[in-house]
Amino acid sequence: MASEGGAPEHSNGRNEVFEMTFSASGEHAREEGYNEEAEVYKSTYNDVKAMKRMGRSQELIRHYRVFSMVSFVGMATAAWEMTLYQVTPALRDGGLPLLMYSNIWIFCAFIPVVLSMAEMSSMAPIAGAQYHWVSEFAPEKYQKFLSYLTGWTSTLALQAGNASGLFLIGTLVQAMILMHKPDYVFENWHATLLAIAVVGLTLVVNVYCSRILPYWQNPVFVINILAYFAFIIPVWCNAPSTTSEHVWTKWENSGGWSSLTVAVLVGQLPAITSQTGMDAAAHMSEEVRNAPSSVPKVMISVFFLNFFLNIATVLTLCYHMPDVQAALDEPTMYPAIWVLRRSMSDLWVTVLLVVQCIFLLFSNFSYLAAVSRDLFAFARDRGLPCSSWLAKVDKKRKIPTNAYYLSATFAALLSLIYIGSPVALYAIGSLLCCAIMQCFCFSISCVLWRRIYYPETLPYARFSLGKFGVPINAVAVFVVVWSFFWAFWPQSYPVTAEGFNWSVAIFVPTIMAALIYYIFKGRHVYDGAVVLVEGRKMHDS
Image (cartoon, rainbow, N blue to C red):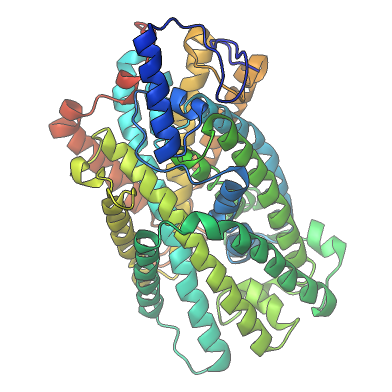
């Protein structure tokens, strides 16, 4: 289908005919430009047309196809591994029933969000994603400021997501040590040092092995799925089980909240966080072949695939956790490890954890690539300090090397949170959640506004919501605002310094820094991506 304001498509592929008039020399130049991009950057005709409409030059090589990008995003989100170790808030504030129900209702609630994001990625398949969409679809007199603010929070969200995977590896290594050496003192700074070491390894691999990254995605992703069954089968066969009544009806409120309702709403954060990686494909759009149709397919495919992995993971945990409090008291601090230790020996648990750490490492390789593309895109539009340095592309490797360096540095700094707070993983997940929900809210709200008032200015989309666009976008905005509100809450009450949700202490200062930079410099150098968009009809609002 075509979007409301888009021109109809006459045919697909390289020989697509457009209702445009060219002089003989102009047509020849266009053909030469396309042939050059096809040869050097592996672009299709649709890619060249999309980049031309957005006023961009191709700088990155389009290595990825649909399946390899599904593998890329599947590895970047590390759905079942991350879900396995982020269940503590739901168990404490809601218990087993919340762990099950929240994953189901959040999945259903986020269907409109994913559909909205997929459509926008088809309209404008570009690495900047949300901030570009805000700039292109927002009212003209507000687009500059709103897209600027979205660019900062998008950068913050992806940087937090990058840090969460690195940090998890560090704490899992500590868990393995503790299983075999019970007198080991679980020092927080140990995990921080381990996370920083993983940051360094991830950076080296991404910079110096960038050419081979697209080619290992498919086999590693398949092996990752096989490893998933290596986790799930022994638990169902060997671990002690509990009853369906316990799983679906025994609610808990051990977080100290005044009512179970509040506890349940606070405890849904892990399920919300599991939906935050869906935009990774959008940030890699400039490296995906035939991006206008491929990226939406990837986003929707990974969304459903991750749900099936997540729901099977929490179902397995819930049915093999007869004593929730004992699981929460597990010395390694991970209830999932409590379940694993009752289904196999500590040696085999260690083997499984090592395998999971390896996959999480590959996940970080992928995620850092997506993070760097977002940072590169925003710097390309001069939205950040030192933008010219951050937007520089390595001529030999054709990757934004400097964006990698800054992303790795920021991840290392975020890992320092754990030194002062034992719930650092929760805080980083909350930071990712609140920042990305703000981005989703702004971008979907803007396309909803344009769909209602100026539908003729919406660009053509190979994946279009058509006449259902307005209700789908409206529901999506409500969902992300709701999720944003609950992302700042701590796990328990009364709130202590150790249990405080430190995401607000990072999110608010980042917004303040963005506003200060905007006042003194940003508003003079940042114009918004829309100024480059071809054929845009401008309206006064």
